[in-house]
Length: 347
Ligand SMILES: [Zn+2]
Image (tube, rainbow, N blue to C red; front, side, top):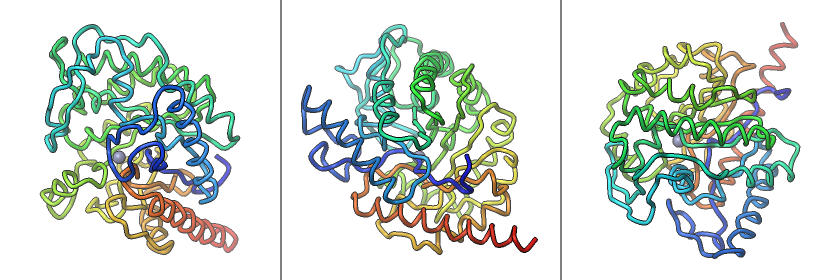
């Protein structure tokens, strides 16, 4: 990456209102069949253009082609029944109607590869593509077949690896695995979560990232955060093992929360996508607020390894707010870039 402090968003971005109902998670599609297919491609073009206009360096599809960051991938696998959904509790926090595992898991067709090829055709910028992580997948469905979380995670890791290899071949530069569950099931992360993640990235030559956050800005998550006390030290429990892993980039929630940023010292040497945008509020950060978070992170992350990012996905926000936040991220990163280059000149 040539640019210092290359910016990106953590994941989902709002969809146009003609494609899906806005400001809603799991929002149903408004189009069908061929119209839906073309509509998703148009949305992808729009969201790419919005990122480019905002000055984002590493672009993504903003998850325009998926209804949800986990279930859309799961629903495309064999062994999963998505007609008979059941309500389960996700991340010990909220109930959702989810598909279930009813037979051996396999991936008989690519899930996002055509979408990635389409995005690749539209831009020469570096592309990041998000996939759900194995542990978060396990936690987002019911399992009537394997009935063991670790075994199921391993099966998911194998199919994720197949998908990731094809995404890499399609020209994706960074493949990111979303693991919000890594901030909840801390013992399991160390027992098998990171091992499953390493199985998912086996043999990849492109860069790999893991995104670990405190979730979307939905009420269930903001209520949960209120119970976490004055300092959030979840990262501390999993960073030693993550530091030793083969994952290249760690994407974290660092802005407006109660994560003491000194925990970043534990993963020094890794590239860090520092969340400098709060996704749980409609207030748009000022560039100076973004810059402050980045300056604080620079105490623990080497400048050439710091990637300014959002705390999490922005699908539940309005397009206007999300656009403003992307612009603030770019402007904040630019302030700090200038400071760093002035420092270099004076050294
Ligand atoms: Zn997130």
